[in-house]
Image 1 (spheres, one colour):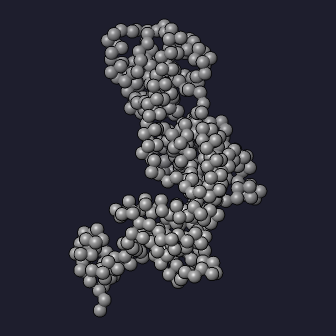
Image 2 (image 1 turned 90 degrees about the vertical axis):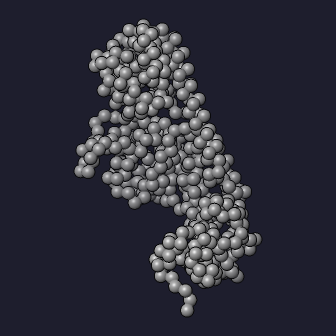
Image 3 (image 1 turned 120 degrees about the vertical axis):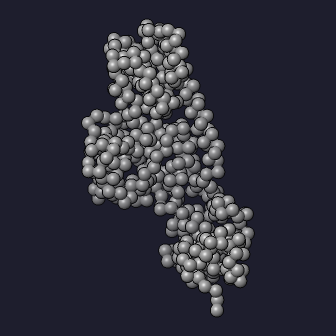
Length: 457
């Protein structure tokens, strides 16, 4: 789904390049040409090809050094050496230096096509194996479809048919609802899984920083540009670019992003030549983009370009039946991180969590559970051990278990209270308390000093 296969053809004879290019283009390849080593090096680094056809001897010298540079940059790209001066010694030396095939001119074009396709297929199989290994390793990563609600099942129904598409995706959802988790899941389970997943949060970044991060810059392009820097578009080539909070993207940057998406070309800041790029864009926002378009705060043409496929992540308050299962999954993950055994929620705790509106969605759910785990040492969590952000979303009238203990609590407060509780339980015996907390005695003394703790009088 990522377009035609790209071949970099390096030869200093225009007639040879013309014949090979014409033949391969009729068989569906995209050909980029270079007549010398400098042009070949720049083309290889600017946009990584699927394969290289490299003449061994150019007017500016033999290409053994260039071959090693290409393999150092990406050893998975097959390089086929072409030469009019074939010998067994030269073939052996080329293979040792990293060449995947050695062909003698004049090359039979049909044979070249067979060899080229075989090398690219071998590379694809190797990368597929790597991708499957990555997916296996990520089998315990967050599942964006965890739950039984009609809304979450409908979301999965919407996502699965578009996994193999290259169309841009816009994910809408409230803060903390898991837009980044869904974007990553789509990448990991799509045809680009072996390629990079690159993410950028557009919120709070200045125009200059956004431009540099997205498109990169050349050395000396502006004050402080002490070295050349590739942009995230380049890094994401052949993979997925995830732009979170795209509604905050500076208006002056939006035309450049639109051009890169539509023409698959862009320029670094301070550069005069175009670079080609192939990325799938997944964008996310918690804002009303059509309203921003009406207010001239977001370009309409960019909105329609990124809104090819729109997915809506429902907030937790609209799928309360999913909260217990999601909470237990998060609890299991947190308990593993903290070296704890399995911790479960009481039925009363689950009921209370389902009544809460979760203004911070899954992110807030995780924070509440992490606090509770740090404050308790038991194997179950009761309603009294769950502290909600009541100031952000007060408990509704009639909630019998709404208490003043629901006030916001920072993690540093949690740590201080937990340490104080363990010290009291151990009668302020520091060595026993440190062992119970899993701390070195010296570390516990430092924390006692930092939190200004003292034994009761």
